[in-house]
Length: 210
Image (cartoon, rainbow, N blue to C red):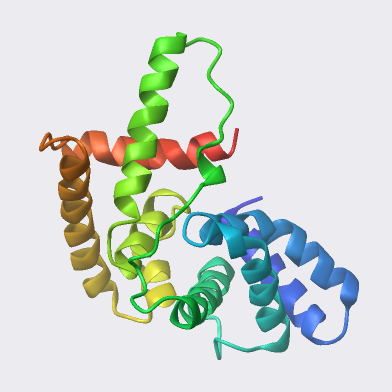
């Protein structure tokens, strides 16, 4: 199934769900649940399940977004972002400064072809990148996650963050540089090359799917 056809099916399921078709809602939730849970699990792990449920409730009721501007995934993650911001405003004085806690996204099955030492090193490097990611402003985190983990287009990320595609390109550039600096701060001043950093970001998402 192509991304476009899946998106059309998701939109059709949403229309049916909002029209009272419970089975359509269950099917749509099953298709999208893991993506939404992972979005919250890296930022508010203790409340991830509850926030995921709130997001799907808002989706069913048509709250949070007036229309689907690019894709269903971007529409749903935009609702998740609003849900997260409301949660952070309620629980923290300064959103974006909270401790991430345990992130189950790092709990991946090891590659049987790699050595234990190499697996441990890779895990530490990726854990360090995720920890550094949590130090960035919230929308920098989301932009990087949407780009490297969800593989959303620039237009889709712009829809999630309610801004222009041009501003997303600039934000991704600044976010990558900020992440590089944050990793260097955690690693006694040693900053990884940007291509290595991008590889680690992408690898976190691939590990979570194994």
